[in-house]
Image 1 (cartoon, rainbow, N blue to C red):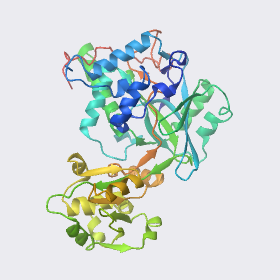
Image 2 (tube, rainbow, N blue to C red):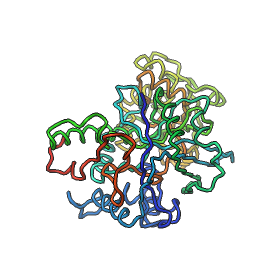
Image 3 (cartoon, helix red, strand yellow):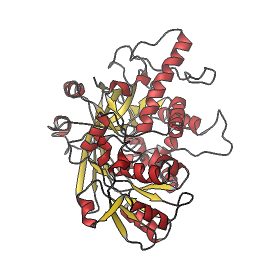
Image 4 (cartoon, helix red, strand yellow):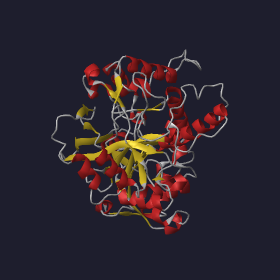
Length: 461
């Protein structure tokens, strides 16, 4: 049973920072260096200073990017830059943007706390694998600050769109929305709602749902690890297990969007090979391609999701490829046979190169790019040796694969736009300038974690 809760979120005090535009940021993992610098300069309290702070050559075990993040959060609370909502709250959140065809889209959802569940419960479904070093970074940040700083983007199925109707009906024209405009011109709007009857109705609607992680696999794995370690440390310190669901680290923030919302868009992520694996070149590669693919008319790419487009460097013609040898996929689960990213991984990266996409990425041979124009420019400029243009899988295709227990290749989906970091926060250690914590008078018996629970003198899990 999926359990979501209202909470006392910590939010920016707009009497202090004027606009969320000044202090919010994209998720840490999509912030390039130039944007990081811009956000640092935007406002002294921009959240990028916490989620992606500046490292220095003099950093030590006790003074580093993570401890500075914790100091900033404490300072911002002391200065009333971050203040908690006094009433139990859920948050309506919408995003409005215009695409390349000048069509306007709006995606709607809500922010709440979710009781963290292991994947084995099948209440939360992942769709891609994670990489340990990224989890370690977010884990250290969460442990050191004692804060849950961003929402994981999850989707659910609601063909009747009952949640959006209840949360947004009659409120969109009101003037009590907080608004931010990001670097891409996307308009993000946040509104707190505190009606206990409405909140209870929404909680009931989710009880029989399962949630699919759209974006934030590393952060969800961080939450699972943090929950486990907090409970282990608690037992070491107090000599007994913490009661079930009783620690603040048993809960985390999520953004919940309906897969049946027409504003929920999935875009493809293309693959660019920066250099050939040892022993390979364009001539050998193209000869090998024709042993198991046929080149079909370009128009077929629009109607057949199992095709993919290959492009060589310079002004090489594009080939639309259709697999002709199904035996190449025999080790793949049947549901993945219609996924072009899985075909690419299985037949070309593993079959031809005897390598994985993840290893090719980590050795800087492979690049993921979401822009057709960017990929094409790399190829025109001879900055890469091969490009593979892929389709965006449908949300229902993603859900079917995940419900079967399978995982998709890394970066198979790109849910756009990203969720802003900085709309609202959840503290594991309670408030500085107000009594209580995120779940005060909401869930009985929940405890904050001691601020020093994860200190080095405790034995690591």
